[in-house]
Length: 324
Length: 280
Image (cartoon, rainbow over the protein chains, first blue to last red):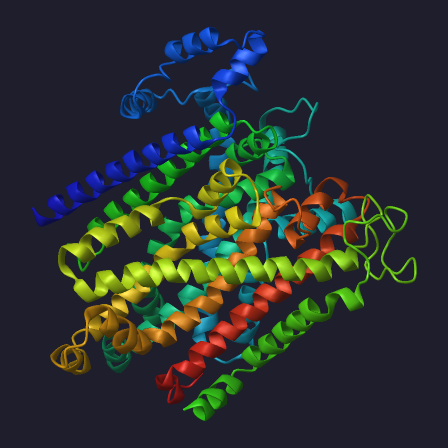
């Protein structure tokens, strides 16, 4: 019962967060430079006061701000995120078209970073101070300090320009009419560099955190008990230490997953990956504020959903979770 | 006290190295114009000169014949300036909100923390992009955007410290002595919470450099300031012809951020007396 109540509270909080984000978005749209009415009047070649007033009335811009906000929110709930005048398409259609590519990229990067991060952190924590530990710690520190976009460009320089091993542009070979396995292989090759360069920064974060958490858990009484009982060291590490050390790491990963979509703007820009991030970059270049804010709203909504999901999964998995 | 601090700090070799790198960066900021006399915006040579191809241009020139070494040296100034100021601003916001929430507790705490969580729910880099794009790129807008997305962790940290510190006897003593609440917060509780805040601040400067450079990379830098991120961004489309345009400013970012993170860890060791007994 208490658990249900907690989950209901979290869902409500998530919805509230979405509402606030949409409201902020509305205010940002209004703060964006360039009055859309004067632009339209200018393009129509008739910028006299009467025509401008008529346009204002037509688009409801003469109404009080609260009414405008209400209408904006109603539109957002119905999936209407406005119109991109540059691309001559509804914002939502543009985003929907790009969403799968971004989900594929961030999803792959998420899995890669978590798998390798946890593995490296666990290996490093086995013998603190050993050369293996030092090596992993240094590598993690360096990747943690490297800008995503620069790492991506260096990867292109090395693997595409110098070695010629992997493609560094787009998500498939243009003009190659591939089918079946060949097409899948082509896609995987195009995915590898973007996903890997996006993953390395987060991998460093998870490796550092896993290492610290495992060293902490290893000091706890239940581990000593297990050792005293004569449980095999490998089993202690996997079944006792790692399982408990994973909790904070996975929590952080849930929070970071939303941030990864933000980071994807940089990766997608370098690799010309046709996702939401690249769409945001194009919107930036063209000063297409409707599209930019639409992308932001979708990104933020996805982050909120991800946090919520992590939280809900947690209340089910970990009985100790604080229900207050 | 400070002797013990230095002893603990210096035991962390990485931290000492980081401090050295940082010192070099600061010297570059100070004497930069002497070392690199070219204006980073001026076209001073032919375009696409490779590093060392021409004397006086150790890092080569860019697509318009501008000196890359000058850009890297001058870029240090704006990167560090924006990072330090935006960190200071987010510390002000975060410490303010966290201190009030932690000291008063109850509904004040609950309200302020819900507000903080709301900010944390939004992907910070995406928010920073949108803020700078809407309010137009300038040093002020970039500082504000970075501060707005960076303060929540500070608030949570300070709140936690204040929650436990306000239970202590010295706070009760100060209350009995008749000190005003703002005075207790500022002169009694805050100094006791300073260590973790200092550590966090050094790590935040590092993150702010990454954020600023990422914004500049996307073309959201101040158009009047040469910055590392902008330089890497302008190399993006000519990567195959001129690798040096991207490599050098990027290395500058990595080194500076790495140094700051190392110093942060050293500060943590130095300020945390409990670390003394622990084996590393």
